[in-house]
Image (cartoon, rainbow, N blue to C red; front, side, top):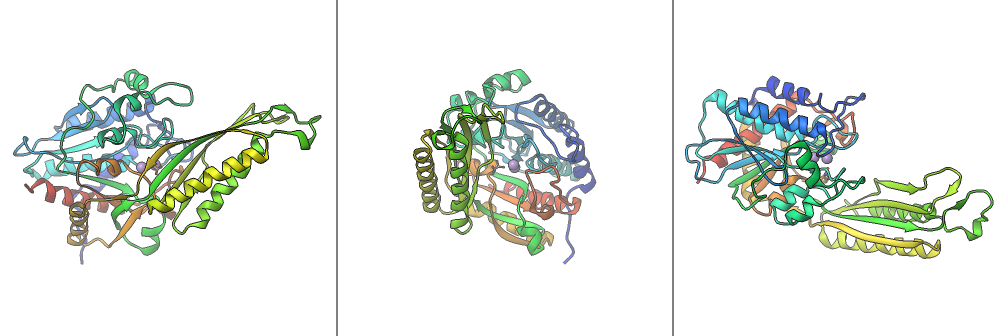
Length: 411
Ligand code: HGY
Ligand code: MN
Ligand code: MN
């Protein structure tokens, strides 16, 4: 069957490449951390493009940006699409921003085709999806979905103690609109898969059924700083040794359950000097699984391993869980709308579960939501070499557009 693109593939690709210049890194990726000047510049560019496409712009108190294209009946709840524009420190050109610019491309293509939908359509940016600068992830969509209070989000600090509220004000995106409390008729998010399945199975579109649950912990192990030379091994209270035991245990937990994921991604050692025994080590744990009970067991085992390592190495332990996201199941109607669109447009497709978290996970709590995945090279993401093909990027956007039109013309 001949596949059909509904969108302007070259224009979408160019907007992605232009946006990737903001925070571009030597190795071809982006570093555009949440609420930095680069995040502001990217937001400003998106807003400029959306205004040129005839949209009206609304910004809420967490800096979420909504670009609205009017429909025939603007009293009806909109169909919304979007994702995030903040990146990892060594992020790629597509993670998040593809979903933001795919939403703009849908609006631009509707304008080109002079199509008026019954319902208004909105393209959106969700603040601090990555949870890299400000933990946890997906805070702003989480507030929209009722998982966190606004005050909690505004007061989340980065590692230098700057809060989200202060940084939103600083970059000029502390909006007035309340976060949430308004209905979406449906929400769709286009995103690269960030894993190897679609590429391996040679499918263009992933019909995302839902996503893994997550538990994030912050751990501080405290021993005694002392001289690396005269301090005998038997009397040391070495925080790095304790942390090493926990890090190894977390990795073992990840391997011990099928489809589990377990990662220690952030480690800070103090005083971080080569000839001083580390007195304090701070690190994070990221556990994921599609079954809530298994995720709970993994978390219990990680905590037990930390307590054992602290005891055996004479260390103080501060261990706290800072985030729990239950496994997600998307709305059957929206998932079906994506599947129908992929079939009607002739793109190969398969059902898939997301290993990564996304803003639609929380929006799914207050509105029917689903996602459209496209492959990325080698399944690599959260890496500057992250890449996708223009063909797949346009295919995913066409499926997004078709699904959105179907929902936007339904009562
Ligand atoms: O961590 C995640 O899954 C997402 O990239 N924030
Ligand atoms: Mn993402
Ligand atoms: Mn990401």
